[in-house]
Structures are given as C-alpha cells and as structure tokens.
Amino acid sequence: MEFDNNRPIYLQIADAFCDRVLSGEIKAGDRIPSVREYGASIGVNPNTVARSYEKLTSMGVIYQQRGIGFFVAEDARKTILEDARERFFSEELPKFAERAKILGISAEELCKKIS
Image (cartoon, rainbow, N blue to C red; front, side, top):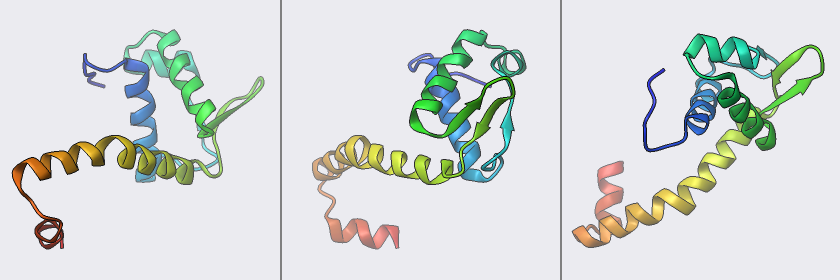
C-alpha cells in the first residue's frame, strides 16, 4: 500500500478499507485480519492499524467479537455511503462550486457536461 505523506496513515488505511467494502471486495459479515496480521501485510505498525480499526468501529463499519476478531457490520456499505455523501456535500462540493464560480461555469453548463 502506498501512502500520501499529507494525510495520517491510519485514515488512509480506513479509507482504503471503506473503498474495498464499497467495491464488494469485502462483504458484510466477513472476518477481517487482526491488527497484527494486517499491519504485517501492509508494512505498518500494528498501533497504526489499531487506530484505523478504532475509527472504523466508531463509524459502525466493523465490530469486534471478543476472542474471535473483527467483522464487517451488516450495514457497513450503507454507513460508508452515508458518511461519504456527507463529506462530499460538506467538504468537496463547496470547493468545487467555488472553483466553478471562479471559472465562470454555470450550473446548466455543468449539467450538460455531466450528462
């Protein structure tokens, strides 16, 4: 896994996991590797992976069964989509809209290009 130096690694790992859920590579109910297993497989300190798993757990994407491991939540895909949409509308869209305004791109012109 290649990492961007401008963003915390644990967030990049969490985002990559979410992308794998959205693509269907990881499905609801799947058991995921332990913190140590996953850290070793991607060459990252297990504490960094633990932070990623904490983030995913707090989002409701994964859950832990004591003594068994981590699993993908049943509604993980829905949760990830809702979070991604919210971030898009609150973070990305305002920047995009401002850039379009600066460039003089109208909503009508944009809709034509997207269609």
